[in-house]
Image 1 (cartoon, rainbow, N blue to C red):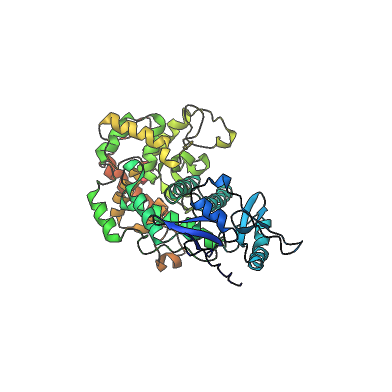
Image 2: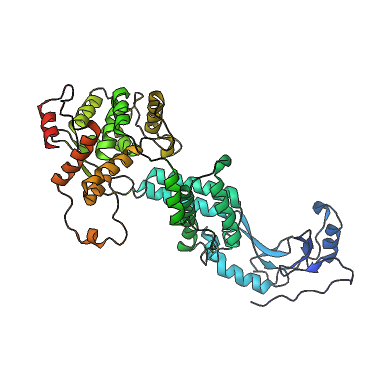
Length: 459
């Protein structure tokens, strides 16, 4: 590609200089301003002197070098072409050969509706749309949870709000990502977020921009700079120590069980007995429960990891009670759900992702009514409580199986192990947590049948 020769100023006192993009320009208050193509210095001068752009008549537009030349001379001083309803520019008037060469390089992508092969035209908004559409297809194929898609959607909104929808991805520099990190830390509406949430925001936004290069939307990786990194482990440890523990006492859980509605009581017991979170309870189906023998087998939606847990007689009894009063599901697709609201719908969030969980809201009301509501403690705290108490059994592999956690990176013992924890080990864990909660009481639950008693003795 040949570099066009810049023209000389028409007069020594001409206030503009010939910019490399083919236009007359001047730096005003630290910002570069453009006033028209090299070929028409008079119009550029008139614009600089304050004339309305609408009154500037661009003259001296070049003719096409040949009848079959695919581009036209745009008023901006560049050769251009409208493709699929959008105007694209290929270089200044003074170098039609370079403009044609660029057109020939990029036309296949443009005509097919793809982003230019060199990525120059990819805006943040276009990247977000392509990224979210890709993640939506993963949701539809069952490879991604809806709540994860919602997290990505939220991060795309934040990135566009801070960096600008029309900003070109390849124009981003380290200072842009430093600004983005600062905006994440401040949170929305001036409410600062903690280091864990900050790390999650940074990770998700990196996934977004890595998608651009990984899918050939840009021709080089985005450079984040050193500042756009997750908080260090030492910061996370200090923050964790400052925060209140995310767990309930046995007395608090018994208070909850005494006042909770029929369905919420069963969910609470599933939380402390089998480490189910709110979204687990919302998605739980009848086929994943064996109430006759007292077992639950439920792959964790977040990871797809299999889980198996021994159910207490109290949990079995509460589930049976919930099923007896269970409303009819409006949608036949939900006929197998264990828990249905009084409106005939599922307990899944309807609009804002899993942070808007109806189960979390009902739990918050219950905690508030009991006078035991405090920061950081919610329905998911039952999982924290289960793991904390269950780990005292010194069988972390069995606890991890119930929790549905992925093996730690580098844990080769988990890779080579060919057997899952036995039912005897899972029963031992259930026994320990049940004893902690009910203080080892041998009292038979109200309305417990013979099978319930057998389950209690086995646990």
